[in-house]
Image 1 (cartoon, rainbow, N blue to C red):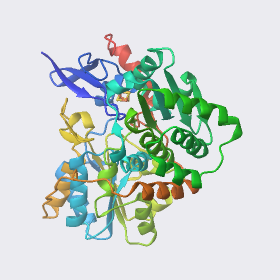
Image 2 (image 1 turned 135 degrees about the vertical axis):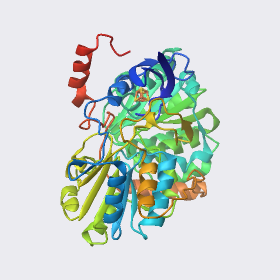
Image 3 (image 1 turned 180 degrees about the vertical axis):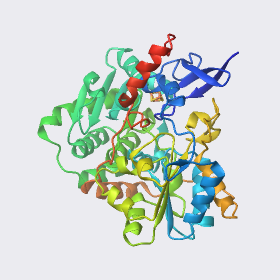
Length: 476
Ligand code: SF4
């Protein structure tokens, strides 16, 4: 009998609706969910290929110790024996809220103060926290606001991060003469090909100048104008005309939507300030690659950065490391990760697919994909659409089982009570401009593609072709 379960794609923060069709528990294919009120049945290439991940032949479905398949219990006991002292934990940034709560509790209960870090390989955490700090000064846009905008400002390249967003943004641009789509980005991208004005390159200078122009037409926030005018550098001359054009469009538009899809926290913060300066007619839509954890983690004591964990490996305070969902070797190309991992006594890695990190790990654990577990992500409960394969478990269940193997119990509490930090507008502006003077750290990985099966969606297209060859019904 064929069963259908509705779910969401979580490869980017758009969360497009989809339907998983299965028979006897096996996934047949993924279908468009035309009843989804926001995305109306659209999926990009990444969403279309989710079904291929679920029964992919490279999927890890059994634990191994030293390359030998073992039972779950054997693996958890082996880990408990190795992680008795000088141990640390690194969890990926799109872990569920339950997984993060378990990670924090595991740190307290089983690591005796050893480090617990969350890895955000795309820089989403910095962007979200920058924007959320300003969230009390503007409204967040809903899907319908994208279609109703007279003037859209894309900061970064939203068409690349969440391709499905291109439809409503182009609908808005084409709805009436005078509507415009504009781009502010460090580099040209897909979105800039469709833009009326493209401020490419000097994101900081351009945005500050843009703010000054917009503020010149806004009597609502004179104090912001003074702060920014007093501290901003002149705009590059070659962009002055485009900035003026955009400022005119912003001033004349009835409804403005600012879509941030950037891994640059300074650009994201300045976009939020621009929204604040425009007052009630502007709304902000935040688009991210991943990053469920975002602000939740930053507000919790006990979490640290991945770099701090590496520092502790150098200092000998971490000799045993458990990684869940994060491929450290591929995600931090600028750091000598292999050298750090080589200093460990024991590396244990949980993953859904083989990675460069699992290849170096002594113990490997199979983990679930989001579509296989009931969990809260981005503030919403997502239901499991398919059962996990073999012995795969969520990070939270893995941590609870390791704790149990050590005779401990986790009592994870919700991490969702996080509140954005409060400050006055002037403090936020000054802090932001101080931040803008420094070059922010470059994003460690700029990935808009599926990371599984060797890291890239394109890397496993051979498998999709093979699947088509043996299964005549194509994926929809
Ligand atoms: S735009 Fe693509 S990657 Fe993003 S949620 Fe939709 S289908 Fe998934």
